[in-house]
Each structure stands twice: as structure tokens, then as C-alpha cells.
Image (cartoon, rainbow, N blue to C red; front, top):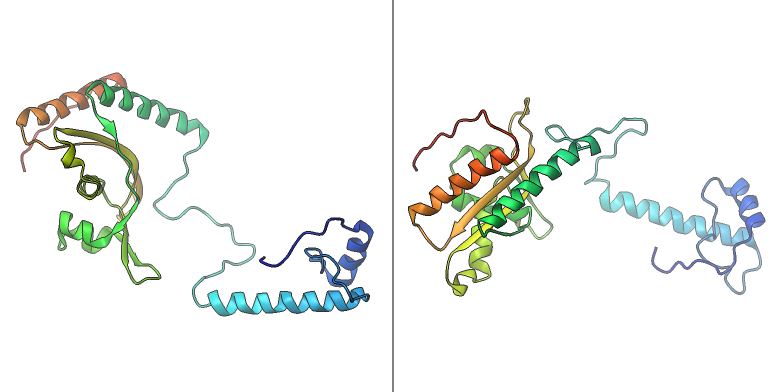
Length: 238
């Protein structure tokens, strides 16, 4: 709390006595005894007044915005999300490490973009009438009334960063890869989550078809290095 300073010395016996008098939050713990006030009871009454004002202010400012759970309610993870426990994270780290080795062998560089973007970015890139935009995105207005969205995919963010920071001015081909969480409000089911993770690669600065072949070759190599052999690669065109 602003304006509260820890005293240089704390009277342990005095704290115990005030705990008995005023409950589990002893008054006057966070500030030394003011000069000119000799009666500790008066200090306690002043502090209770401060606590009461803070309590009223908290409920006045946030009472209509924050829903408080019941005291004994067991809080679980949000539906469609999950915790990655130590037994699992070691496997995730292995996949990420192998992916980095493969990407770097093909001269890809890592890029990291925010999980929050302006909603218009995805409305333009994915399509404002698609299910992703109209039904699946987590979109909200912040306190500045700006519409923000938790990214449902990363390609749009990578292109936005490429343009915003003028990477095209460096010339040549930009081969970028990324890891990270994405968010879509789909119906949760086995193997599908509302917060999920993607490993992806983007190539900017060329439209040569050999780049597509290289990315596919890189994907096959990654799967083989991870010990996956029984897979089928399906090709399509857009």
C-alpha cells in the first residue's frame, strides 16, 4: 500500500496483544507509531478506519466487474485447457529441441509474436465471415475500448511483424519458425483443446515452388527424428 512503511523495530509482544484485541489482522503493523499519539487504542481505531475505507473502495471499484468464487469452492483449470506436469514437459522439450535442430539446419530463424493482437488482423487475414472469426475466437474490449483477440493461429501475426518492422527492407528470403499457444473456442474433445500449441514455419520474400518442397521435406525429417514412422503425407493446393 502506498504510504505505508515497515517499522524499523517490531514489538512482538505488542503484536500478540493487538491480535487478541483486533483479530487476525493486527493494526499499526505497517507503519510506526505516529508522533503525538500515545494511546495505541487510538492508533488501532485509525487503522481500522483505513482498512474499512480500502475495503469499501475495493468493492465499489471492482464489485460489479469481478465474480468472487465461494470460499470453499475447488477451483479447476478453465474448460478446454490443461496443465502440463513435469512428467509431460520433458516430452514437450524433446519435441521442441528436435524441431529447433531441424529448423536451424534449414536456416530458419525463430520469431516470437504476442498472443494478443488487434481483432482486425484476423478478420482481414482469416476472413470476417469464417467460423474462426465469428464463432471460435476469444475476443474482448480492453479498457481503451480496443477490440483484442487471443491469436487463433500465428501466420497472420508473423506477417504483421514482418511488415511492421520492415524486414522486407533487408532483402532476400526470410525463413521463420515459431512455437507457442493458440486459442480457439472449439468444442473440447479428446486431443482437441481451446488452448493448444503449434510449431510452425513461414517463408516470406519468395513464391518459388521449391520452398514448398523444402518445407515438406523438413516436416518429414522432423517426424522421422521424433521416431514417427507410420504416417502419411497428404498434399493439396489452395
